[in-house]
Length: 320
Ligand SMILES: N[C@@H](CCC(=O)N[C@@H](CS)C(=O)NCC(=O)O)C(=O)O
Image 1 (tube, protein in one colour):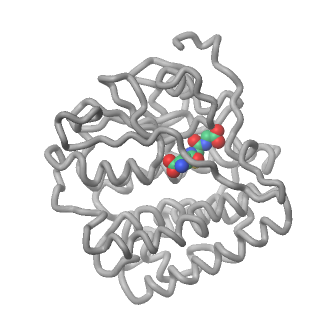
Image 2 (cartoon, rainbow, N blue to C red):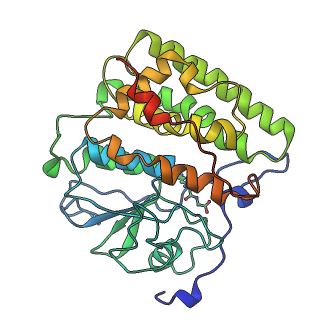
């Protein structure tokens, strides 16, 4: 599909993923191909062949940008950034926002055109991140948890940090175990809290969220990272929710029992990750605030974006 005229109105995750009891239930992702170091694989790892479509506002897409930066793959995998306003036609490639790039690969107007080129009868939700194969002109994968594993291990020959392993064999069970509560209760927990359409579903999500934050606080009071003394993907996955929390989730998603700035260990952890080489470049508080408050009119009808708090300034004051 090349013409903008055929771009359709899409459903968003918060309209399409509500259960009978008002709870927000995220559906599974559709494209699950894997890039491989094996040269004969359908999606063989090669520099310049793969492209990421991301939103700087999106915590799931943010994971992929952080791992790309930590592994030094900026010259190997290209990136385009959508406009932070999630429209009724989904993500657009309008470049009129600081940091938005347009679609430099395909010149398309909307992300849904990327999906329809890969699968003309695609009827699922149009989400970022998307890992695009420029040679085969198709989507490899649109699940961030898979994409970060590929960036960690499939591009070793081209990585400037091949020694960094964010999913080391010896820690896999522990990492999986941490992801198993951080994902539902924290990463997705903020969405379950904010998109809930019943009081009960909201309260259930908030209870789970703050119990899990307390658990992470306890762990990180005793050690630098979630799985001990080394950085793993579990830390990256927690970070992208924490960095958005005080500026967005606390107010917009009503997760307001406490701010992350009031959790000493979580706040220190956030500063530690933010200061890793390349990570600060992946954070856009401006796009993040704008996206949530401006796009989700069902929970913020005026679209007004609050002025505070200045999370990055607070982080700068943290001593490690
Ligand atoms: N399972 C996906 C979830 C991605 C996702 O939900 N992305 C949101 C942005 S934060 C999105 O693109 N939503 C589009 C919409 O709701 O229309 C992943 O982790 O990669």
